Amino acid sequence: MGSRGCGVGTPRPPQTFRHLGGPPLRLKHDTSSKFLDSLTQASLRPIASTVVPIWPVPTAAEEEHDRMPKSDGGQTYLRRVWPRSSLLFVCAGIVYALVVIGLCAAGIWSARTQTLDMARSQATAVATFSSAYTSRMYDIADEVGRHLAEDIGDAPLDPMALTPLLVAAAEGTAQNDYFVVFNAEGEMIAGSEPMQSFRVQEDTLAEHRAGARRHIGQVVLSRGTGEIIYRVSHRIDAPDGSMAGIVGVAIRPFGIQATANRQPEAPQVTVWRSDRRFIAAAYIDFNASGAPIIPPTPPGLATTLPGQVIQRDGIIRAETRVEGFPLWVSAELDEHGVLTKWRMFATSIAGLGGFLLLLGGAFAWAGLRVSRAEETSRMLLAKAKEDAEASLATREMLLREIHHRVRNSLMLVSSFLMLQARGADLGTRAALERVQGRVTSIGLVHETLYAGADLGHLDLATYLSRLGSELSASLGAAERRIVVSTDVEHISLDGDKASTIGLIVSEAATNAVKYAFGDDGGTVVVRVRRVDEGLAVLSICDDGIGRADTAASGLGSQLLDALARQVGGRCRTYVEGGTVVEVTFPVPAG
Image 1 (cartoon, one colour):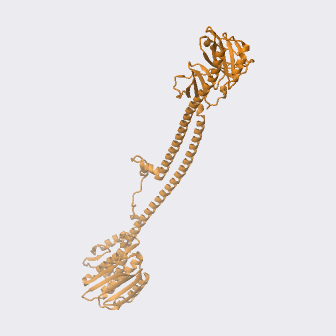
Image 2 (cartoon, one colour; image 1 turned 45 degrees about the vertical axis):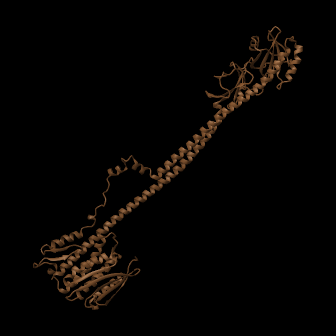
Image 3 (cartoon, helix red, strand yellow; image 1 turned 90 degrees about the vertical axis):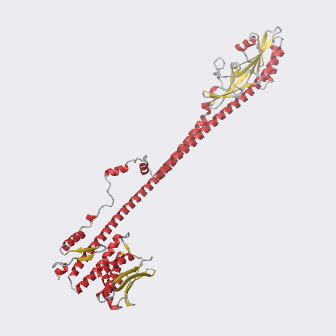
């Protein structure tokens, strides 16, 4: 028996059997042992030895190459070092800095332009006002002096007669100016203030001797009173036309100060004669003899159009004529002094701009750090996701390999059972064939799982269709004119439940093929239908002799009940035109 079950003994014709999911295998008796040995070794080979990486492991040189800038202009490297959000913060910071710097520069430049425009306007206004004041001041003194010269005429220059006349003339002026009469030699004859002593200036005496009717002299410092006075004089003619004397007017101006008292932004007003000789200034110093220290003559004096402003060598100057007199008035502003307040304003604006830049830089830096932190987190999450996907892919590959190995092992068991059944008696052969059908149903579960997209679930319609074909072939249904067909809805089940359903179908279909039909054959139909939400009915029915005791008896009936309870359902067997085995079991909602 043992030798016949193992296929060893007298030669027999070559046997044919079908392994799971493959074409029929034809074995010769003298090579069956070699085939089984090789099949056994293949099934027992460690799984880990057959696992290969699904992607190549990068070398150190390849990793270094990935870190190097690429040939796309460094864009890939730039994106790695400065992610897009960080680049946005950097660009926003640069734009913000440019805007702040531009606004500060525009404000400073605008303030400078306005300051200089105001200085030019101020110079023009001061020159115009000073010209009007100078004209009025000289006009009064000149008119009184001219009348005095005419009144004295050819009368003798008697001090007793001239003094009352001079006093009355001085009282008629707004500033109570001094009036003095000199003889032809320049000696003082009389004055409106007898206690004051005046001496005619050499330039005044020289011009009157040369025939000048009026002379406007330089400002001088009175040695008697220490006052600053302007001088204008008129010639007194003798009857013969020669110069008999001079009437001098000493004008007391107001507002003249020493140059040390001048503020940087204060204008310097200067009066000049048309022949470019200095007359007076608002800020002036004197030497020990009382003569003025004359400032440099402005270039282009008396050639500038009235009202024109000249800006040259750091000086802003406006010039205008004195109406009625051969005089020019210039108002000068030191550009450096004018811009003193502007520099303070510019410093404040620059400080404010610097503060805004620091504030913006702090915000940009904080945003950059947050962006880099977010980018780092995103990269870590992406890396974790990649690792998880790689781990999942490895797990799926290993599961497929396990399902494949289990399927091969079950195929090996099925082959052993078939070989064992060949030499057994009829009872033993029937039992072995029944066991082989059960092994086949379980093996198909693993084959369907590793061949499908989802390693945890399989389609019940696909699985039972394959199982029906395998059972029909292994039981020789076609030779007996028995058709095994399936009508199954597409229901997704996990591998354990599908395996149990397969065992139920294998048990019931095997009973039907073996016991339900005579020589005329028939049909066995495997059907699965959803009857309610989360509930399905499996039925294995035939059109055979219609005996309920043919469906299952003894161990088979107990096995069906146990398998039905294992999937959470119940099993019942009844006759309706043929034998029907019906199992109601829960399924996932869908």
